Image (cartoon, rainbow, N blue to C red; front, side):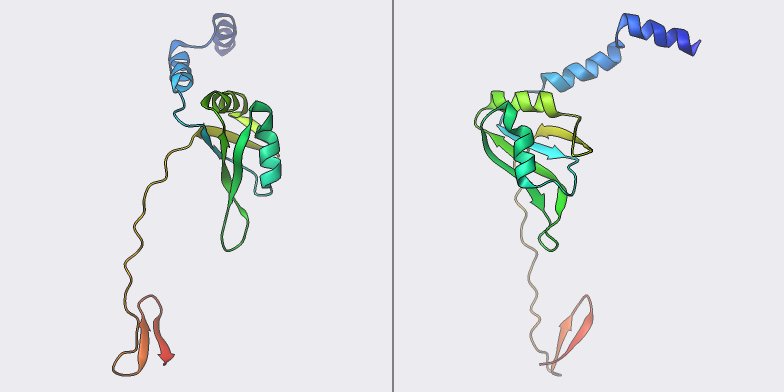
Length: 142
């Protein structure tokens, strides 16, 4: 029975529900030439990243985001093209494709949200001569 339904699907095409979701995905248009790419390999360099997206148009910037402490890739990056049409072409061609052995996903980049800096607490010396650190305890003499 399952074999018959699979054969029927091959000849009739995708289900209406599946085509509905894919049309939503394809109908969403870009408002900016900047793309967010996730699923990158940890070994992907900025040069390799730019080289992979170069065939689709003139790139303004291609950057793999790295951890500040270790310098390793965080597994995502951004590509900015000169026009929205070039970005749309890259999105259509590179989404769900393999890059250096990993499946990457290409989505429109969202504007960066403002994050307020954490409140600063005074950690100066106290009356007894110790500095306090709320996460560890006392830190020693001044």
